[in-house]
Length: 128
Image (cartoon, rainbow, N blue to C red):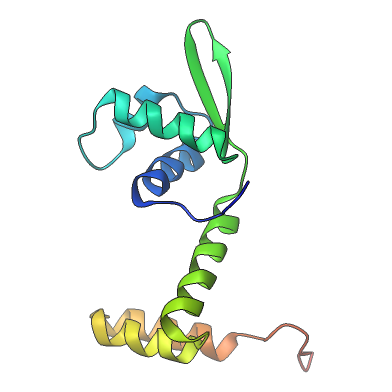
């Protein structure tokens, strides 16, 4: 696999395949959030297979695709890439920008604060 970054449509297709664990082109069409042509999804899935993100088995005359990479692997890679390219590897800049551009409820803000307060950086020991 050359790159673990996905284009918008590729990511949409992969999210459906991850959710279903095994999916045909029609499964993706039934579960994707917008209207797409069968050939568009089929071509995208073949491309994802060629890139090493999917594999397929044949069931009768139907290709049934399954993921070869975990969703977390892709989201971590893409987030690290974005962090590096847009925020100079600064999590603080990322969070500040996120809070500037996205309206959060008090409840969500409190949950985010709790996540930050409870986070233990790798390699640091807790007092337990």
